Image 1 (cartoon, rainbow, N blue to C red):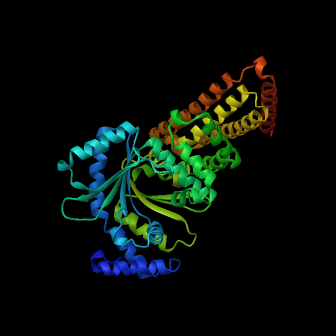
Image 2: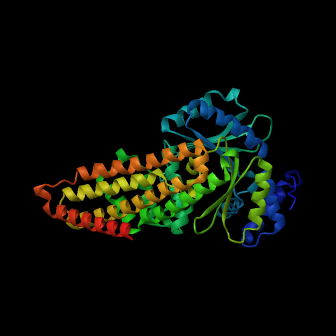
Image 3: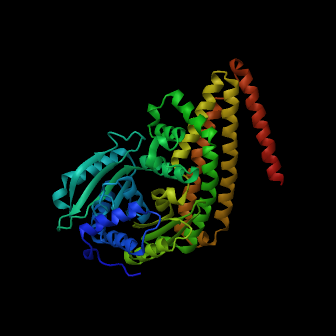
Length: 440
């Protein structure tokens, strides 16, 4: 379908478009979808200029920064129209957006302050209210700085710029992963969607130093109740290997524009393109013919690598998220605390859960190493080999650090005889299970 130019539509027509969608969101006419796509495409020029500028600024501040841009998905535009009855679709401030993920909060503020000081040298102007959700987080724990920018050439289309640290980004994407796998809508409806999982994420948003022992117990308890680490880990481990195999086979690091598509099973497919127009055309065709109701995004990333894109879009790739390492750490701390307090039942529950997760992750680590050895594309590419080796080593080191630290604190002590006996029994049980699985 040919997409009309946005100049063919008036503000009045866009108001009526919003009314029609709200009246019947389940049966949107093709002409109305074309209007939405026309609106999305109209952001191409301002989005490209603003992205190129802020990406350069971010790299000067932090060589490890990851900057992406996206045009809001048609499904997301429709969802926002339904949530905000007074909103006029062509005046929404987040149709197009750039995101800069910095290595630390300090780097976020360094970039923000640099943008504010040097506005006269930038091709865009910062407009409207600046939302600093790092200084004043949302109730959910969300942290990021949001600013709106418009080009100085007279184009008044606003592009939202988000600045966040890697830690804050990992947290935000984990919320979206939870919504996908547990069929919740925490991102949209907060505590009403699921009080326990909302509270889990709210606590995880806090820096480690601000969490009390009781809060870490709470995190561990909710994680065990929902089998949270196991559930996510099962999907993560398989997706991680499948997606990396796709990436290597298709040599997607050659491209800058990507379509990422995931279904209810969380299994992703993705395609790479050299040009915006080609990627957007295929995005719209995929959306219109989306009989399986898959999530589809089109995004841009310069100098792409598997590590970069899986960090930027871990909610779509469903690959390992560093916040999960924190969950395992708090489970280990709950194990140690219950051991030292002679809370026998609590210790048995925490320690068995920890061993289950450890056994699962160890088996998946062996599978990844085997996949690495057999991947012919890796053998032919030093770049792919180096990147994957670094990923494997960092994962092993993070897990080993937690295990060693915990077991150093679970040594025999006459004061903790009962939990020590349980510890030895559980260890022996899991050693037997591992030996049996090796024999089979």
